[in-house]
Length: 350
Image 1 (cartoon, helix red, strand yellow):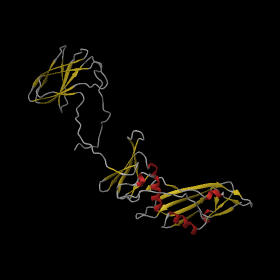
Image 2 (cartoon, helix red, strand yellow):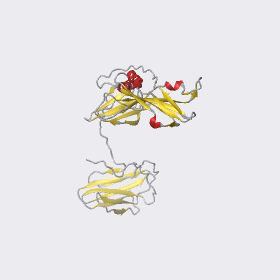
Image 3 (tube, helix red, strand yellow):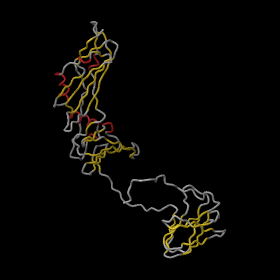
Image 4 (cartoon, one colour):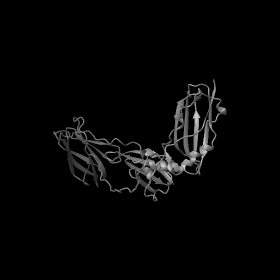
C-alpha cells in the first residue's frame, strides 16, 4: 500500500541569546574566546534556510518535494520565517515500517567568488504512527528540533589571510603541544568554534607578510616575546691544538660511558713538523698508534707506538691535519653519542 504524506515545514529553532564584545580594529576577535560569539557571527551571515525530508521507503521521488528553501536578508528569525512562503515537503512512502528523517540547514549568501558557507544544521527522525482516527502520521515531536553551529565557519571581518593555525597549549603547564591548521578560502580563515576559550593562541599570517596573534582564553591581541642569541658550539671529541704545537696528550675514560666521545686532534702547521703524541685510558691502557690525515685528503698514514708510551707523528707539509689515537685491544674505547639527524638536506648553507 502506497501512502502520500504532506508535511508543513515548520521548525522551531533554539533561541540564541548572544552577548559578544564588539571588535575594536584588530585588538581582539571575540570568536576566539567565546563559542557564542561565533554563533552570533554565523547568524549574521545566514540568509538561506533549507528543509528536507527523506525515507528509505520513499517511492515516486521524481514527483515529490523533498527539499524547500527560504531566503531573507533580515535577521535569522526572518530567514526562518521565510519558509512560510515555501512549498510543503511531500514524499510518498511504500510501507509503514521505515524511518522518516527531517533535516534543516542555514547557509550564507553566495560570496564574490561564488562561495557559500554551511553555518547551522540539525534534524530529527521517527517512524509512522496511527492517530486516533486511524490515519498514519509522523510523531509530533519530529517537527521541533534545534539547529547547531557548524564545525567550521568563516571568520567574518578578517581578510587577506594566507595561513592560520591554532597553537594549542596544555591546560596544566600552558606549554604548546599541538598546531591545528585552519583552512583558508579566498583570504578568509575558517574558524573552529570548538577551540574557543581553550588554552593557547591563534596565529594569522597576512598577505603582506605581517602576523597577528590572539589569545584563545580572552580573544585579545597578543604580541610575541622576541628572544635572540647565537649558540657557542663545538664538535664533540674534537681537540684543536695550538698552531705549530710540538706535543699533545689525552686521557680517555676506560669504562666507555654512554655520551663519552672518542678524541680527535686537529692541528695547523706552517711547515713540515714532527709532533710527539700520547694517549691512554684511565686504567692505563696506552694507545697502540695514531692515524694521521691532512684535511680534505683521503689517504691516512699509520704511526705505531711499538709499546712506547708516546709516538712521534709526521706532518710532512704545511696545512691542517687530523690525528686519531687508536687502541688495538680496547674494544669499544668509547660510546660515541650520535645525533640522530643528518642525511640529505634541502637547507642551503647560504
